[in-house]
Image (cartoon, rainbow, N blue to C red; front, top):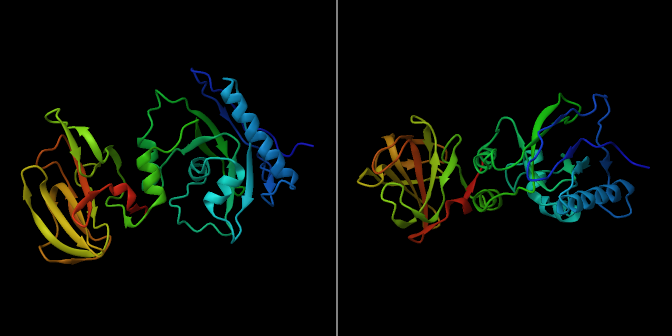
Amino acid sequence: MRFGSPIAVITTFFVLIFSLVQASSHEQSPYPEITELLSGNPVFRQYQDDILAARMAIAAGKPATLHIYRYRVRSTDTLLGIAARCSLPYDAIVSLNRIESVNTLLDGKMLYLPSIPALYLHDNAENPLENLILSSFDPSSVGIISFLLRINNGPPQQVHCLPEASFDGTVRAFFLTPTFRFPLPAGRVTSSFGMRKNPLTGNLIFHHGVDLAAPEGTPVFACADGTITVAAFHEIYGNYIILRHEGNRESLYGHLRTIKIELHDKIKSGTIIGIVGSTGQSTGPHLHFEIHENGVPKNPAGFLKRN
């Protein structure tokens, strides 16, 4: 006996076919519910078979069928544990269910579990993590298959499946190790931490932070409580701010159009401290954001959380 029916057939050849498949319109959920993530549970066994079939189809370059299941999270569950038990990358569960952080409380929540290892993107980003995910992929280079998903018997939502795609290092770090809040309402990473070519000179240099693209005039938030130690103009950073935090950490905000605080101000997390601009050595409006720990530049992606 088979529980439920396929949502879509995913084609994973080099040229991927765009398709739109509507889920069942019945009042009862069209997705089988797994009550226990145990091999003795017949629905869970079927789900495992569907995942295996999808992996084998993808490996053979053949169409893979997408099935969606449901599972209500228990107090003893963790997101990473659920993903491991299902033999599915947590990226797929996170993106389909719009989970913002590894610390998001899931107890009692109904999770939707896909059978295809993929990223699942929604039409409109609801949080900075989704903005980062969307900014990481070029639709012209990654095949997108669209389908409609019904959540909790609500209206269908369009979801885009990117077969075999996964979080890049920056997105993964933002998701797994949140400490500070995101410094913008939304923004996409245009230049990551580490070695890169200077966009103005072309020379290979070490980039001590991340560049977050945002329209000029976007408010810039303090990523954590702290004290303003620098609020000045710099030849490279333009108008910039340094905020000192507990734990011998500092955050730097560069290329600001306007500085909204004063030197030595004590600032709460989320306070507007400046406005996105393009001052100093800049190729366009964006926020250059750094975090230093014990005086050493660190990858900001390892500290930030979504709001």
